[in-house]
Amino acid sequence: MNTYSPKARVRNEVLIPDQKRFLMFDAYLLRLLAKPLFYSLIVVMSALLLERIVRLFELLAQRGGDTDMVFAMAANLVPHYLGLALPAAFCFSVLSVIMKICQENEMDALEGCGLSVQRIAAPFLVVGVILAVFSVTLFGYVQPYSRYAYRAIKHALINSPWDASVIPGTFIDTGKGMRLSALDVDASGRRLDGVFVFQTGSQDNNDGVVETAITAKTGELVIDEKTSRLHLKLHDGVTMPTRANGETSALRFASLTISQDYSPDAPMFRARGLNEREMTLGELWREGHGPVTAKRRAHVLSEFHARLVRALSIIFLPLLAVPMGLAAKRTPRWEGIALTAVIIITYHQSIQLVEGFGDLQLVNPAFALWGLGAAFGAFCSWLFFFTKGQGRGMPLRNVFKFMDFIARNIKKILPASKARRV
Image (cartoon, rainbow, N blue to C red; front, side, top):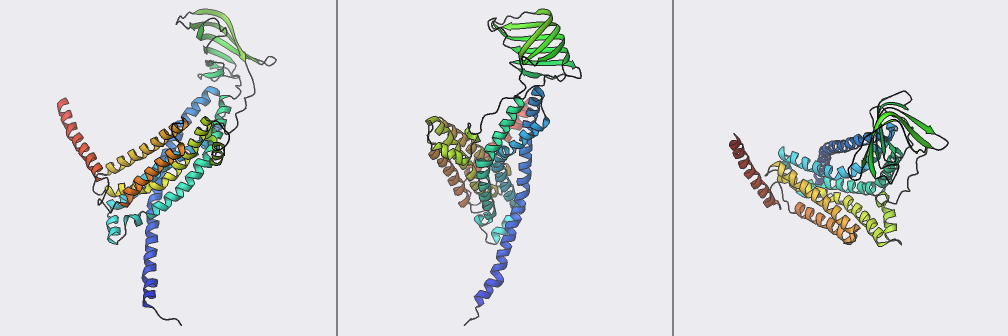
């Protein structure tokens, strides 16, 4: 027999709407998080990619080739730069959201409703877990293949068969330590005017010449297909060899021919996996526990554990960012941002340092790297769970006081120094 319960009615009419409001609040925080996270990733990755693309185009200009190769290499760099940018972008995005709701007094309303810091941060923790799983996939299985593809394309660009043509005003690396440039080139790219050649070493290994600079009024590139030799025929020029003792001389010539081997086929690139950074997590684990040398095992296991520690550390970033954002209610905003940046950079550099010690077999990479990750997680957890609210119960309040003390003293010194200059 069913009986009517007033308490059940209260649960249906009051608690369920509260749950919906909490879900709406979580969705609101996630919307606030999405915008800075997206834009920070775009800005950081664009800056990193553009810098690398400029260098790749310089390489393309030296070697010749199709511009599609540059964009293919840049596309394969995206997973690498995404892995670099994601942790910092996520941490500072959470920090900016907390600072925003504190500045607009939304945090006061939330605390007035009885919500704890831990409940407010719940959606960020969920995102951190999702990004950690994504990072394991990115570091463990996407980056190894993209890194190998990038190196394979770069190898093809560097070692691609040169078509024995010259672009005016561009230095061409013809191989064998020789670089070639011309001020003017005909339509075929083979007849040259205003030629400059710089060659390291000498065709005669016993003459003591370490480098040679050659200028010529005209020149011509000729390929002998029978002997697979490339001949650069120069006319009316000067050759200036430099010997190991620093002695330089200048010799005029009416004609001079420089010959070197020429192959229309590029050498094959090595197989994937010779470098541990090109191996997946599964491949690293199997090789690290297989019959390999101690040095190889140290490199492989250091790479394996470092990837996992980096990926899983993202879970703890909201535990660091939320208290730093709450501290901005009572301290200048720059202090929280600066201290967060110092902690993240120090942790990242510490992982690299410990990984290097593991490569040198100075430490056990498993214990050292996971110990470092556990210490970072414990620090962030302590900071998070001992923070009671906006500016209250902040474990690092003495650090912020010290930073504020330093800033005030710097401000006192700067005007005095300006006055002395005047």
